[in-house]
Image (cartoon, rainbow over all chains, first blue to last red; front, side, top):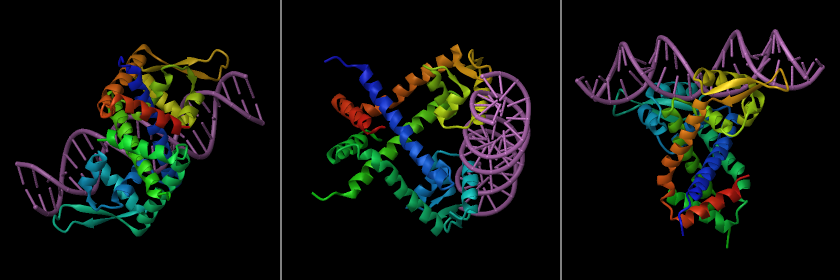
Amino acid sequence: MPRDISDDDDLIDALGQTAFMTMGALTGLAADAGLSLTQLRVLAILRDRRLRMSDLAEYLGLEKSTMTGLVARAERKELLARVPNEQDARAVDVVLTDQGRGIADALSIALRDTLTPLTEQLPPADRGALTALLRRMLP
Amino acid sequence: MPRDISDDDDLIDALGQTAFMTMGALTGLAADAGLSLTQLRVLAILRDRRLRMSDLAEYLGLEKSTMTGLVARAERKELLARVPNEQDARAVDVVLTDQGRGIADALSIALRDTLTPLTEQLPPADRGALTALLRRMLP
DNA sequence: TATTGTTATACTCTATAACTATA
DNA sequence: TATAGTTATAGAGTATAACAATA
């Protein structure tokens, strides 16, 4: 059977549409909470991690100076706090406040509520198949 | 068999990871071309359409005033042009320049080149299955 | 000397409000 | 009066370059 390049283009197109749909949902939920998508990502990352400024920046693919501004604004909203690092006096750890954790948890639930109507377009067995296919493709 | 809610969470998690991966690729390609993700979207939309400012804004979910700035900056780079609308003297159509079309085409190819190594993690039959599953789920 | 984080600066993206020109 | 687009303004996100404190 000849390889049809348009099959690959179809998949890439579907991945693109899926990405815009998912990011749209995330952006909307963040906006409802008065947050940008990046701020939402920061909260999500810090949910189960304590990172220093530089590690957080690297995780997000941003410059340190950008991180300073992001953390400063989120700190002003009392969503997270700067804590001096014990081992290295130059470093600053960033942690969620109780309020930040509450919002992060609420957003996680809201995302599920938002996407569930879409995932329910598929019968349960297909949901598992889709998950497995995506995971096999992801790095 | 009892419904396991964590199955749905797994799918939503995989969709999120897929979205960040795909958007990351798109953002990187746009940056390589000196464009923002939004500018890339504008070029992609205008590839096979001629839209007025207001329709373009609605398509992207942005305010008219935001559109003015986006189009002005892209026009300064000679990627697109404003054309008076024939039917309505208030309206302005936005069209790609030859240069803008060239960049839009190049970006489309670059996206395929970037994502192909990922899609090739799956055997061809599974690529088709994944495409079909995503399409059935998308609105 | 190298690294961590901040500050200063500049540009893009975005929205709201007020405006002009046309319908 | 309503609509299309622009301008003015303000705030967030982003990067680069220069800097202070610490390693």
